Length: 499
Image 1 (tube, rainbow, N blue to C red):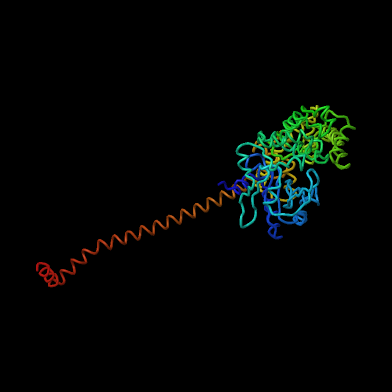
Image 2: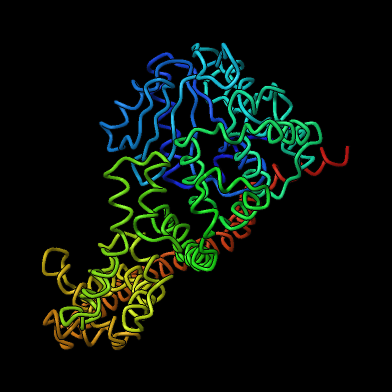
């Protein structure tokens, strides 16, 4: 049986690990049972990248969220009806905390009545078996896999299976979700689930999808690693028109989506964890006019302020580009500082859409040259310290000056950096020689003292050896003299021996 906690912790980033430990601690302090659920467990089992942490608690998650906020986390969204909270944990790690619940439908397709429940009931009411798996984070059962609907077997068979014949009737948005998961993971739809899907389409249940639910799916596609695969699945099933008829008619801008997808992969390679929802949404809506974009976002359930921010994103990115190639950014160090503060979404958008060679060259230099140089400043600090300069404000200032010079191509070798450091710090070469001579004199004196000690020890040992040898030579003569002085003793001893 796999060690799921070891597998999980080995796959988590340090920030995700810290977030998980904090949620565990708070849940234990509040007396709540807590579990990792949904996409986190599914992606762990399938080997996909763990983008978000999804927690389910047997209790009120808002109490945990309030404590998390005290430690620097941010609540992005909170659904009080479903007790579902989206959180940006400290360390820029995304996730959610939800209450375990059971949904009870009075009539198919209506909003369910909610009953707070145990984790097992919560898992059984979910959409697909591959999303109905949990890992316990509780002290007495930490690492225990909970799989009441046999989702692990479906994952091994590479199938997406709905949990109920009423799955699509109760929540028609699951028609979109089914195709999204199958396309994302390259899974086939389980035979009976496919029959239920076809029946739901025949009964026009897709036209009952709530606009806000469709909007949530559109946002989910914007976060996918391969959005075009999902969009094509929707288009082939004639379901994109459910998301928005205008978008279905003009089609998403797949070229723009693919460019941005490639940029996201490059940013991952450079060590970033980019969240590119806004530029990806703009790419999805790339062929629409501003008025049409606004209509799509409004129908999808975006609040006015959110929609305005998305629609103005391109304008802000172009203003950023203008600043980046301005006179104030001629020095590489100034461009570095500007890009260090720039939101990653804007940087990604410019990489995907800008044709300005000056802006693109600076962004690429920042990602692939300047940031690695910045990471090497520890060595520069060590070299400055080795010259004899104490750490402090002046020390830090010199290190920053060296960094600025390195961005221009100077100070690549240790010898060149030493010259620069001496010039900036005022430490002369002679001072270094005197220090070396002083150390050499101390070492020489210590060596002489050690040699003298060794010589004295050797002489003492030699004297002791000579005394021992002399005593050994004297013993036979002493015995002979004793025998001569007392012959009877010797004769008696001989007689005794012969007897």
